[in-house]
Structure formats: C-alpha cells, structure tokens
Image 1 (cartoon, rainbow, N blue to C red):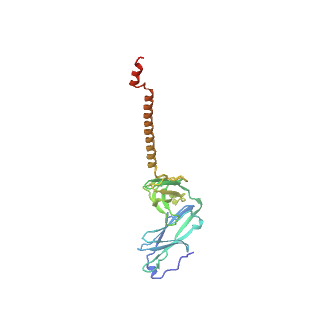
Image 2: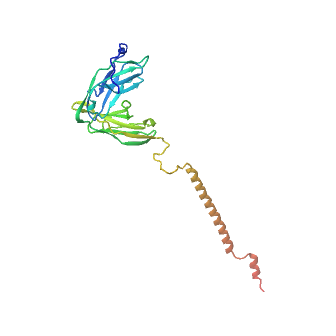
Image 3: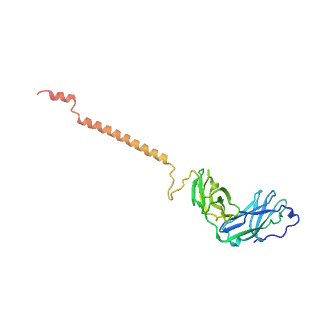
Length: 273
C-alpha cells in the first residue's frame, strides 16, 4: 500500500503543481453511481501520476504524452467519501516529484441509489467491415457516454456522446473493435449533475469476413463442392448417352425381326409345280 509522500525538495517543487478535478465537478455522487477523477500537469514529457484518497494511494498510471490522467470510480459507496489529491513524477532527465495538488472533496449521497443504465443489445457478433448499432437507456433523460471497456480505471476509451435512448453506430468494424462496451448517463438530481450507475457490459465479437458466423461442430468443411457437382453432372450426361445408344440398337433389332422374307425367297415360292 502506497502513501502520500512527504513534502518534495526545493528542486522538485519547481515542477508545475498538478490540478485535480471531478467529473461532474460538483463532487456529489449517488450510491452505485460513477465519479471520474482527472489529474493534469502542464509540462511536456512522460509522467507518472498518482491519486490519493486521504494519504492512501488508490490509482497510478504512466502517460507518455501531455494527456490528462483520467481515473474512474464505478459503483461508488460510502467508503469513497473523503478528500482527494494527486501528484506526478517526472522521469527525465532525472526522477523528480511534484507538489501535491489542491484538495478536492467527494461527497456521497447516502441512501440514494443511482439509477441504472442499460446498453442494448446485450451481445453482438459482426463481420469485419459491418456496422454496429447500440443504444443506452435510463429511467431519467440525460447525456449518455459510450465506452470501449478495458476493465481498468484509466483505459475506458470514450467512443460516443449522445442523449439517452438515442442509437449510435460504429462503422466499418475491424478486430480493434472486438471486446466489451458500456455506457453511463449524466442526469440531474436536485439541481445537481450526477452520473448514473455504469451499464451492463456488452460483448462484441468481430469475425473475419471469410468465416461463417456459426460453424457446425463435428463436420468438415467442403472445399471441392464445384468439382463434385461437375462430376455428378458429367456422369448424368454419360448415362443419358448410353441409354440413347441402347435404345437405337434395340429399335433396329426389333425392325429386322418383324420384316417379311427377302425377294429371292418370294419368287421361288411363286413357281408352280
């Protein structure tokens, strides 16, 4: 377990002080809802961010860019009540630590449950290049946010922002879109913006275009269907030709049997005794 370190040295304190904020910025959360913590440092280069509740570290992440470090607490409970601060470490040219940010306070509305959100459909199987449509619904109208979910406090990739009960589409899917998705909605409670609970996880499976969506078990795929069909058709034609030839030969034989004797035999029979 990591704790908030003591005051940095004079040299370290020359680093810009980080800023910390909540989303929504009121810092008020309903039980079971979501709160987002953002820590930002206006300095170039790789940085290692740490977020503390009181003096106890709860999150950390290394960012290579100047992006804001974003952390999510889902399913908030009373134990998340308290003060929050963040610091960062600058790695180059030598490891230095910043001062701690100002303190912000998270307040949990005890006994008031955040409404649920539902992501539909619950699961989907799509082929590469196809489109995927989904919608986020909640009992109260609000602004809904869709995420590609990585089960991590800082790796939930936002993919869309729309009003609740509105369908969104991801176009031309590829294998990077394979995985889980979720959503949450920002609603108004007693004049304050709060997040609903995080939705169910929607499992999306992306298959290659050449593969069937469902392969029967215990059967082998047929790779020579055109060849088999041509063989069957050729055999059928040969049988027809053989039947026709036999028919012609049989017809000639029957004709020869039914004809009267030859002319020579007829003249002999006509000579009187």
